[in-house]
Length: 150
Image (cartoon, rainbow, N blue to C red; front, side):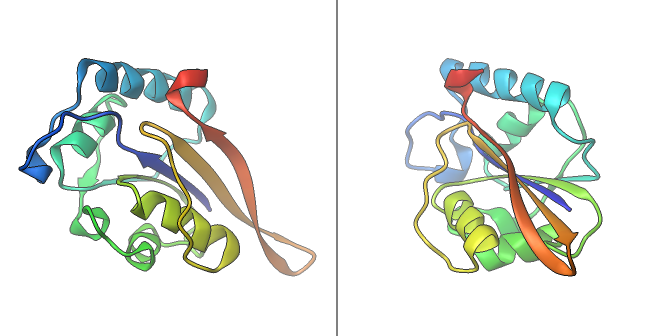
């Protein structure tokens, strides 16, 4: 299984958290990362996105259909995110567009089996893959990218 965790791009400040839109810089970040994903990422079987406007606008840069689900809303538990994605048992490629600190904690849980406070930068993607080698399940980090390096 391929699991890609994409933190939403830079968003405006605001008190109505779910309505915060991307900034012009955030739209540029999302476009650059979307282009990278189209060129280098897997073909996605599913894209799941938080209900927050900033995550939907980030995902819109891909120009692919996606599902809006509450399991990846702000403050979601990493276990919820992994369950929604089907990690690690699904035989598919799933992109999750969500929030920090959940994206970092989800990466930590998938990689180490322990929830830890890891950071995913705004607009950043962590690409993890689960595979079987020598009758052992392994997690491979395929890529960690940030908009600034694309």
